[in-house]
Amino acid sequence: MTRATMLAIAALPAALLLGASHAFAARPLLAELLARPPVNPGEPAEQPIMSPLALEACLRTARVLDATGTAIDYQIAAIDRETAEAKFLENQINAEIPVLDGYGEPGLNAFQKRVIRHEELAKKFKAEFPVYQQKKKAYDAAVAEFDRDCGQGFTTSDLDAAKAKLGIQ
Image 1: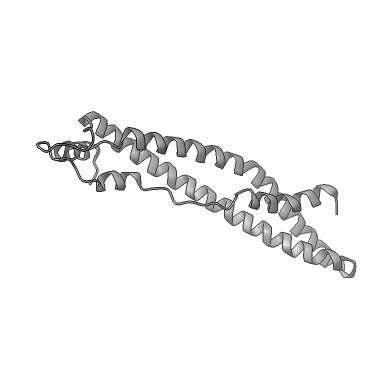
Image 2 (image 1 turned 90 degrees about the vertical axis):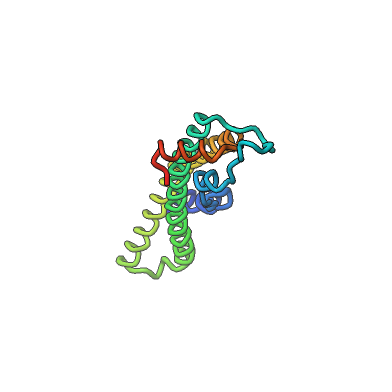
């Protein structure tokens, strides 16, 4: 087995330890925003009230962030599936290494196919996981900005008007 193969076999457990398997469920920001109780215009508000335009912008942003969060969830789920496959192959490969001398040609060919598949998965992980981390970091920053900018109250009439304009039920 080549040095590159051994390094590829060793790369996936390290990646698992570094957090490849931290799938998350994106917050349903639009549902959270719509579930907040509106402020009655005549009563004193605990927090400032958003303008109708600001509320509309928050609803649009929530919708976009919901879609982005779902896409990121699907991306990490795919990475997790492939990481699990690679880990399974790694365990199988490691268990077979001591007995390779007893394998015939078909057994060696099958072993080689598993090693090649493991290497493919390791390379794919090395390419995809940093991209996922960047997207997740940008998403987390956008959610934090949303929480900061859209945490104010709103009136029922403004909410109804924004929902009607945006086609939200």
